[in-house]
Image (tube, rainbow, N blue to C red):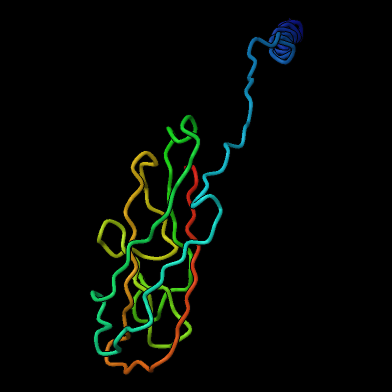
Length: 162
């Protein structure tokens, strides 16, 4: 008698397990992945910041010779609702994480967003409808003596959707 009860229990458990494995599908998941159109900075053109031909070495102090960085930003309005981050990519000067290293070892170009220094290669949130003001200013390494001559520095301004 015990063996019949045992068989019935196995059949009941087995039948429940079988039913669970063969349940009807009652959920569907659908969607569409899209790549938002890229933001464009300055219509893809180079942004030149020229400090002039007559910069006095003794006056390079992180304040003198400041220049506004004139650029345009265009991002798709519908995709921009999710937010935009801007990053300035470049090689930071060893003496100032907010300065792009120039080809002169003790000279960097400090970058400011809305008059505040910001770290290179660090994204920050922006409102594409009201892009931030960017500024550049030459800065020398503390205690260094700058040498006369031309200088050059490059960086990449990148805007992308979050």
